[in-house]
Image (tube, rainbow, N blue to C red):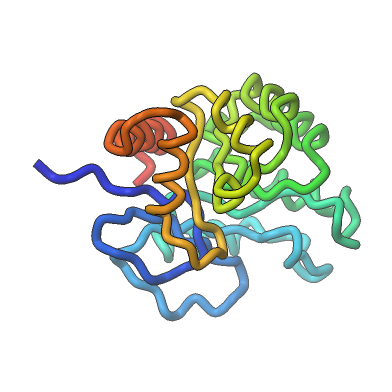
Length: 222
């Protein structure tokens, strides 16, 4: 019987041990020639990479998703900390959600200071695929609103040191979270160890729960 893998739901790291199952982020319109067919990918246009000449991206996203055999659309989202007009960001985000619905792919979401806008979009443009909020570091009130909207929350390196975030993570239902490394060089195993400690459960039970969450979230998308 195969061991339950560690699942890294969002990373920019291409180096993995055999026991880690990761979703590697690929940015749309970047050079994606060095693709490893043994890895899982997500692809999308990050709000930081929006340019005027890319306001219509649907066909490019569909093509790249099929080329990479990507299992998720992302990371995509909204960011009020950058200069790009929020309405432009919303339009790009919404178009990518529509592609996710069309291709039946979950979405991995980057959100900075725009959770109310994000939830409005989810209500108006429900994709009927899973939404994963990556790198979650906000309070329990925002988390509760996201959970009510049936989002998953993904936690990363910050839970190792942020005491307030640890308390938030402890309150997240076990069937609604993931763990990730994002752009950190930290091992996903260390994040799992800390997560198990915070949740006060055995490491193996944590691994099994996240595997269940993954299966539920991704269903037959792979």
